[in-house]
Image 1 (tube, rainbow, N blue to C red):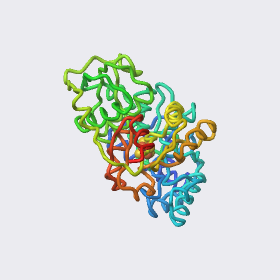
Image 2 (cartoon, helix red, strand yellow; image 1 turned 60 degrees about the vertical axis):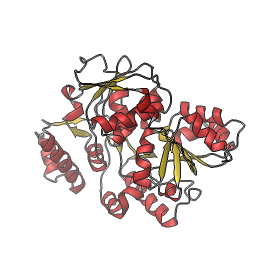
Image 3 (tube, protein in one colour; image 1 turned 120 degrees about the vertical axis):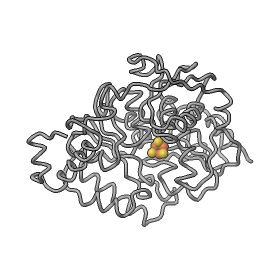
Image 4 (cartoon, protein in one colour; image 1 turned 135 degrees about the vertical axis):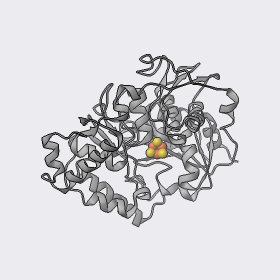
Length: 386
Ligand code: F3S
């Protein structure tokens, strides 16, 4: 990959070891994937934040870095609510290490809101056609598909390197030719709420990392789109999808010849019954519309089970009335974290979720049984004595 004279100097260590390491990471990726050069990015979203996932080695790596990010950069969810961690049952030792990770990122100039839905917090991170370096899989899918920005599936280190240099290697989803859909997914049933997560759960397993285009009978909301994308990114590794007549680039390309049809029965089979001891919402982090729906469903009710709603601190702070309505029911609103990346969910036996992504990850990453249900059914289970 070509480096400009200025980039060559960074590569040779003239800006110090942190920037040298960053450009080495990007150059190595560029060489592997055939990038011609580095291109400027508008923002970075950096995974590798929860102490549960990165441990002491990750903390040490980030703490050793010396420098400042040069584009707006935001963190992925941490392993705990940074304020209410005691209420989650997090240990003092874990909390200390988690705070150290956040401080290390803060020293690098990274905004320390920890959210996988940064597009619901800031308007300056990504717009149509912008190149970005994001690393949480549902955020990548949303950026590429719904916003129409361009990002590869970055890892935490490559997103942080891109943030420090303000650049990313020009390959993959940054290029038009790789954004073309290669498989048509015809969906027969009308979909609602978590059906989109169920659809993503099935399709991701079927197509791996291909770029699909959906032909749907219903027009999804933005939240339903991200639910679809998040689940496909978890059960497969789909980073970009199109929905005919809905998403930004869906009319740009001809329809592919390869086709799969999804029938109603396949969606129904993803739903299973069970007795949850934790009901968790907010994967990806709840939007205002989702918080409003939950508040409406919980108005005048008391939950009889542990209920978590995960969202960003920015939205919690911006909508205190909404949060109060939810909390009046006994449900807990946690910020900065989620049911998957926090160790706090591991003490439960069975988690009910309305997210196809959480449904895929909870058994593997938390060791907890998972049940997928529609939002209304989750609330019914939450307020039931059984
Ligand atoms: Fe976000 Fe956690 Fe789900 S990071 S997409 S809420 S697994």
